Length: 207
Image 1 (cartoon, rainbow, N blue to C red):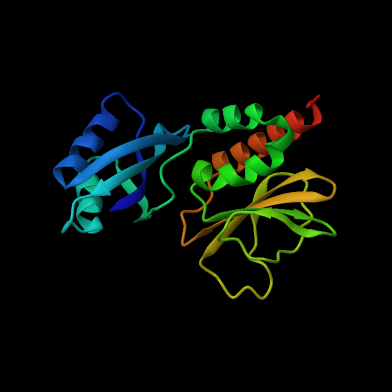
Image 2 (spheres, rainbow, N blue to C red):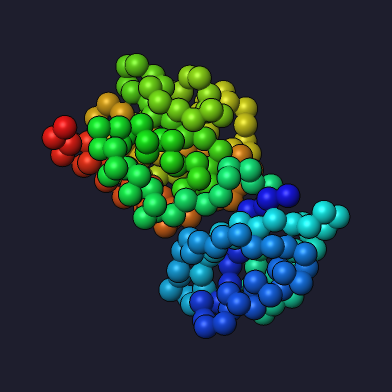
């Protein structure tokens, strides 16, 4: 069964190897790892995509991680998006179809940022592109910079976390995670960079 594990660990040689060994001994099979954030305090945050053997509880993986000095599991949950997409892979996909870059951006965001859904919202037209789990209706939000967003008024879903980025004066992108983990500053910044690149690719398309 696929799971996504977000973990803090010391940013020193051998740390990731020790983590992988502990996860393997606890019954987890690592399929992919991505560094999400490197911090000034000497720690890093990694996302680990893994399969857990039948009969093994996620708590066993968490305990194995916590047995290592300086390691803390931030979040673990089932994850069925089909894998991790790195930023470079997303950029390659966007540049391969420049006339569709804004649409492809929305399609790629769930796997790139480990979010449940993504949507592009127009000021007057509402949702113009969205992944399958996104709400059919979303309000346009006034934002100048990439940032974490408050839950939409009346949504009644306190467990869902939101982030957004402005594409232009009339369009924003909204992404959401149910249950966590919290959007890190680095993730919000990456969201802004990727969205900005998609806009530039679209503007420079000479097709």
